[in-house]
Length: 343
Ligand code: G3P
Ligand code: MG
Image (cartoon, rainbow, N blue to C red; front, side):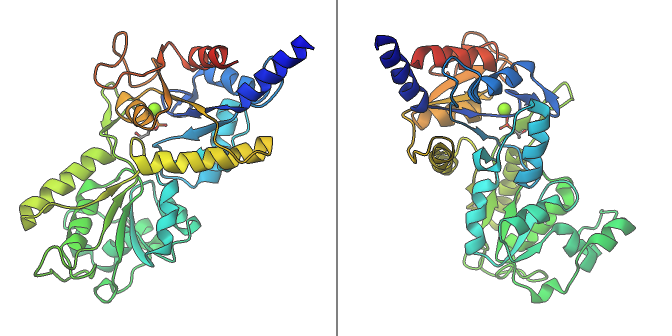
């Protein structure tokens, strides 16, 4: 009976913990698997001493693709099924904005993929920079616009359209064009191109960014600039052109709104796997970036684990944003240590 008591206690403990995984630098590098990631998901999906699922979700600042194809791609790389119901990309919480704005400019990402993302979020009238360049190529004087881009764009007379908000979903593929169009819209009368508002604030449309990372590790030896640097460039330009500060909203880690959204996702995922709609008490964030994963997790009261397979290259712990549960060689070490402590 004692053995049974112990194991039911462990089952309760296993249901009262949850893992939140960063993706890039923890489970994968781009499309390449970090091998320990595969084993971790097997353990959490039931290959453990209790034979039960240990709740876990994925919280990435990644962007640029609809959730379903990205989950399918990750499921293949990680050899474990990943559901869209346990998956948050940087722009996922921005779906809530579809209720407030009808016509939006969506910026960033490859080709027209972010248009597709916005459609799936329920935005009704989606404009991308190419639609505007196709209407008026003089808006971006140095842009070389290909025939293919012309054919796939959706031009209309944007001097008669009010764009109600700007959503930067992913990294800009053309800073010069995107910054010019965003600046034109921010300075316009209520988002109408070919106009300049007299008062830079009263008629300014809002701008949202899906995440704030300055740098992103890539194949290049030195990390590349990301949405944070793009935003800072825009803020500086806006200030020098208008004399006023640009107000903006940033999503993604380490922003509070994203962690609150993660709580909701964990709670409903618990309901799906254990029929209990409750938030586990012991949440572990496993990340590689002290400036996003760890600082956000620390502020939100989660246990934070920093791994050495990504951005963090430092000594014992990060100096500015130390992980409160510890620094680990890889994701498997972090997860095994957390499970050992809780069960
Ligand atoms: O910086 C953007 C993205 O690549 C970061 O992804 O999964 O490390 O939050 P992740
Ligand atoms: Mg990462």
